[in-house]
Image 1: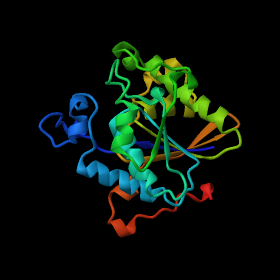
Image 2 (image 1 turned 90 degrees about the vertical axis):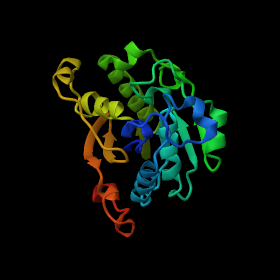
Image 3 (image 1 turned 90 degrees about the horizontal axis):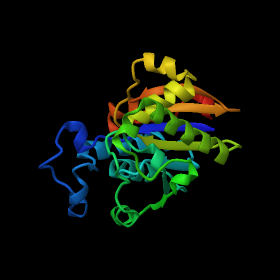
Length: 237
């Protein structure tokens, strides 16, 4: 199984403009914690979609926040067959305590060209929403990351190309505890991993072991549109 982990594109929170910014009136009541993408963020997500257009994705998963689904929406525009995004509560961010995300009906209204499936938290063994203490606890964070990867391994036992759109906290937890197979004690000693908005990291899971190929690929974010290439490392062809 190949996992393409994409950090959600730039949102208004990322540029410290959590008030007085333009937004769709339908989402105004949620903007205090569930921020929209900026214009730059929409472009980043579109570029990530073009970067991945040479890969036939079998599934795309994301967290429950607006910025997660909006990023997935742009990526799916560049997939010829797949038009479904699946939401997993365990892919939520660390700063949205006790918030399960916008109603599914509203997300479907905002993104009418894709099918949105919100899975029950029981699919991974998680919860609908998490308290602030749970989201900020590194052990709990790693457990969520492990549950997601375990779920994907069980669901795709014969392999596949899986895209995961999440936040930087999931990225760090996955690298530390799942990819690098560090103990909780060792992970606590390691500086948190980071990645840029709209970046792509590539992992491969074989027989329960996961390897990292690319980490924080941002080539597509810093070149003219016509120079964005869809070809990824030869190991994936």
